[in-house]
Image (cartoon, rainbow, N blue to C red):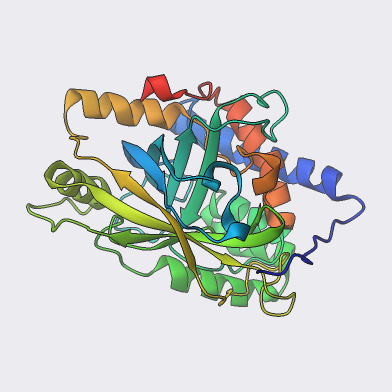
Length: 336
């Protein structure tokens, strides 16, 4: 049984601080919208594909993991989005964070986001690294703002925000972003940040299995879209959804995303993308539709509440971003 004595550390003025950070990211989003349209995201702006998917919960899960939609075996319809992490619509050759977002439908119960308590959805977001180099939301937003401002002022602005710690952070960030990936659908994605899982806390991951081989050329500028399209046209794609639980504050800290958790993984279900053609007219419309959705870790019931300062800051920033770009309403299973 995983430990349940995890805790968050909330600063007294945190809400005001996070509201300010969210407004700063909104300003970045507005600048990018001038070039890419009013629906552009502040982060994860470039979509590769939007796909129909399913989440199947396995039988025989340990009692501690039987929470929410994972309480009983079953299959839920879902939407899946693959994207680059930056605010720029740039070539896939450029260093960047790569992300996956899963929106599960048919999820009962009250949700966390004010005004969306009755939404029938739950979101899972992940990237290709297990940690991030930023200990605080302020450091993260500072780097994002500097990277999206005048290039000559980027380093001075980062130094002004982070001091000399900026050199270590930038080194780790560049190292992680410089890793070259030939494909996204045969890579493992990680939540990086923890969430509640009933009474315990976990990080989750999507581990690829049954990935069909790539047949055909890909463009370097749109490598990830071309690769995913070619593979899913040939055979289904599958990831295993797994979680690793909190152990103690030293080895699995809630508030420090720079520390990699190394507790054992428990497999809970499978995310399957059935055969489809994203390059067809209907496939392009589907990608465009999925791109209108908001993907937010706070699209969840209380028993899956995001944890830690970085997640709490996300709550403010994602809400502003969703409103700014007029994201679509949450879809139901019938829209699949």
